[in-house]
Length: 360
Image 1: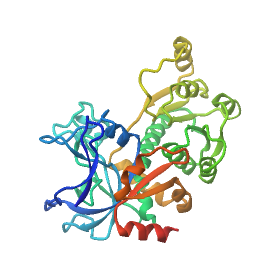
Image 2 (image 1 turned 180 degrees about the vertical axis):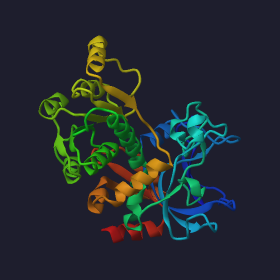
Image 3 (image 1 turned 90 degrees about the vertical axis):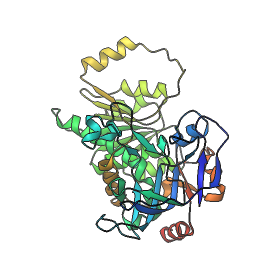
């Protein structure tokens, strides 16, 4: 079968190659991949800056944002052939920490976790994939290929879960949310904020085009000016920083309402210095009782919440988030960065094209 194969740590070794078809263990599902999303983590692996091959070899099957259809399922698994599913990315440490033991393996404390398509486990970028039922999540059949958005949505579902927990212990509910960045994570964060009934504001550099239109379709106000200007008219109780740009991170933390919560979701480039008055920023965070935390990855609970959020969303709006689809044979084109891109998807099968035609 065909698979997207990379050599972690060695840029330029990626290829679309033939690998042996998987042998499904008796308790596993066998899933035919329909589509694979591409994100910055995949590009870092291809650049040789990230990623680990499975023990005993130097190559890794890429891909962690997936949607596929079950072709084989064991009796009593809760799944059946024909089900549309996505695979959870992270797996608990074989010698689990306390978080891993209680199912919160996204919070693994000892670093021995593994991740499909990233760390020591082959990913979902193959025509056929074995998948343990406990790490599979059904998605609404009506979503079709849009189910490929489940993994990035799980990231923001986890962030909102953490925010909800913190705000629940506070003295007042959140009313206003600020999202920095209108990429896939930012737009999906806005979607979940709007579904919570918040007054959502999205800030991005693009002044026109698909991103402003999508933000408004999702129920958010869109802004392309300075963050400080937005915060003067709408002091945010909640901030989700989705760009990773250091200057944006600092600016966002400076405009919080009293006793606000800020979640950092973006990964920042290293080696870039800013002239920041850390003392003044620290004093503001302390004296205003702010909570600032980082979040990454998700567990089964967050994938299930993501699937529910997508099922409740406007499919036309979700469809516009996928701005480019390429066939498997041209998969490297999905790695190109274009100004108009939001989410780029690699289609694996003829059925994927049929589903996409049905959505249109």
